[in-house]
Length: 254
Ligand code: SAH
Image (cartoon, rainbow, N blue to C red; front, side, top):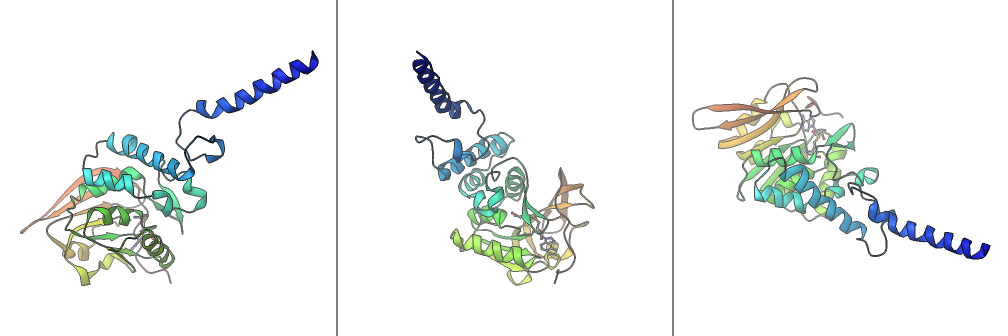
């Protein structure tokens, strides 16, 4: 009798353990250890999280550009962050990338990419390569991307990640974004992902006529995105959303 009760108790425990993963609730994190044999592999799980990111963080918040949505669905964001952060790669927040810098929140990457109105034949300049994720999104929607990073180690790592993923239309250099990259100017669009206190004059000069620059501007941690449009005879600036980017630095570190 005692033996039968023990057997029933053991069987119930096993059933409970099998049932747990399916009632684990929202799947915002990559949790391979609780996935059963018939569940998706780790790689598929990132794919699921990426599609959820596009639906709930990006499309639901009003991003409509199909090419931006396709790029955000395709680029493996988890490949751009280091191990401890991979599980959070598709969450609705910026993440550390070392050297006190961060990769932007997915929505902000999509917002800036859409706002710059990039066409397939465009040449784009990015200031602040960081881990290279925004550059990869731009690489999907533009013809050529030039990206400048002031911290040499971050530039080297971004270059390596981008080449491992097969991007041949993105060039990364270590340098000071305040000067732009005059050799490849003019640019059809410029995206700046670190915040200066005012818009650098060199970047305005290197923007093509009818080009757009999307740039966070402001001191400290409170900035606004400014969308600057250059026409034949004037510069139009429009303040859009409040944001928080790392400050744009003035000098090379070493
Ligand atoms: N776009 C990046 C996020 C950038 S975080 C991504 O997708 O990961 C901002 C980056 O701007 C940091 O890596 C920082 O080192 C860089 N930065 C700051 N000041 C700069 C400057 N003057 N010129 C170029 N890069 C700069």
